[in-house]
Image 1 (cartoon, rainbow, N blue to C red):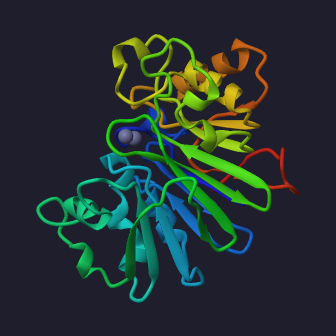
Image 2 (image 1 turned 90 degrees about the vertical axis):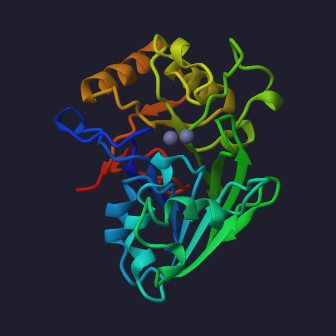
Length: 292
Ligand SMILES: [Zn+2]
Ligand SMILES: [Zn+2]
């Protein structure tokens, strides 16, 4: 499968000359299966450009939301497939004990926050509360499992596999909440999602010095991410959900510090908007390319 980053910023879109290289759009990742299946992970502001690229040859599009914080849904109303007559679109999101997904997404996609209601969209739209592991869903040739992770409000991460290759997406995650070190594997939030993944895209919001002021906010400091990636045995780690305060120079510095901090058993790749990664047997260990 091919994985493309369309938005890597956390919390708030952060455009500007100082963020032009890593990008200012909020969370959105495209996963393309070998059979042409298209998954969209989160609907941050990055989804607008992705939607403009998806042509009519894509018969069905599935949007998998990790949770409903604004930085993960704000682009939905600007996702072109939703506005195309007859286009089949499915939106999946974490289950809640109070309201189904349609009711929760409609809070944003309705006046006064947005001029158009979900039911007025011309596409063939279906919303699903995503089943949680050990249940899986299968979309085209992709197998997907979702599990709740440590973050405020119902929030899931996704593990997506095809033909023995796996990518994991956990953009908002604080596995070290309340702990100094990660405990035994059974008790680590997100462990099963990430275990032995070929590619892990993970929350890397804070530096080590910023984290103490943000305990409980639902995000990770980079040293925590390195520990999580090492414990789960992933092959490649992509830093993601960059703090709006981190400009390109700061993000370069954080990635370089991480790379030199220890002899790590995985590769660290900076989460740069437009980067593409191949995940699969034939292409494993290939470097990243960049969209133009
Ligand atoms: Zn977020
Ligand atoms: Zn969040």
